[in-house]
Length: 433
Image 1 (cartoon, helix red, strand yellow):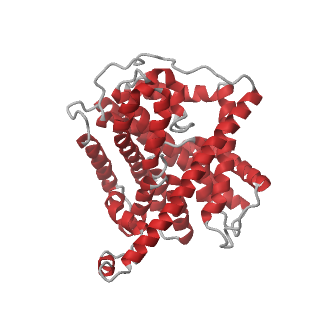
Image 2 (tube, rainbow, N blue to C red):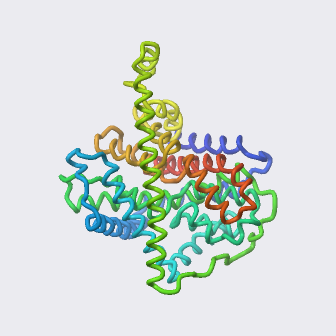
Image 3 (cartoon, rainbow, N blue to C red):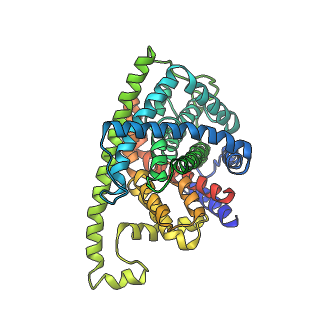
């Protein structure tokens, strides 16, 4: 518990040290944001009622996941990953594509009938009233729980050009700290696994539990992102939508069929983008590891590798070494710190799909404790990686070309803020889990 509190204090301190104006510390946002995080974690992890509600939502996510699997079996001949013929990502790539397309379609239907708008508006109302943030940034942050880092800003597109730098920072940081519903469902599929010895009931239980944790992580990281964003870039001006109560954009789809077609098309575009990133980074990691292993086997470098306690020089080992202090600070047990640190580093350097794939392997081999796995599940649930900086600059910059320079300058800082928001969520989950 004490180490977890130390971790939260250290993360807040780092954010303050990186602040553009250290004299303007946003006490109300920081206290309210942390309060919302703790409340959500307590409700889900410590109360029967909260667990029951989120379990019910998780059942929906699980049903969607199994529906995506059925679509994958129909459209493709599944690879036999269990037999060792293909690595985990061969099956996952197909599941990711079908899951994202299906969830995007369901989201489009929900938006067409106004269901998602009500859920997003309710969440935005809570954050706006609790933390005193503007209507546009609170709406975009709430939407990030359901939509992606470039889709959520579409809800406030007319206001982006007139946003303050602090609002833009919050807009970007919330995008880095949360994941779209389709990606979250794909993460559930990755972590659930496909062990043939596992019964359908066991798989469903694991999938439901994982979905509950990931959904909680997304909800917790939204206020955490505001905390990090507003500490790092405090508000100096008066936001255009500070007192606005309704900034939701009108529905554009004309019918149910139009919503299904639109959602399917948008889902395919997102799925192709994710798969392209997955292929590119897995290939790049293999090339880098081949070079590092060869370098580590030389007479000059091999003694250094041994002194560092590494079996071989590879990307996992280097990232684990660099990020192990962060892992310890989050409350991870010391024997797991290097493995955990490698996950954090891999998520930031490549993407979270690959990091969750590595976590899946650690779960299957029993290489990390259950508590460390829980903290990792929460800490990795975001889009805080270097490639996402380009995605946000391109996506949001296309909506407001006049703010592209601001987006470029804020990108790296917002990405770090999003990562630290996710780490703080994992830290709290570890304390209460």
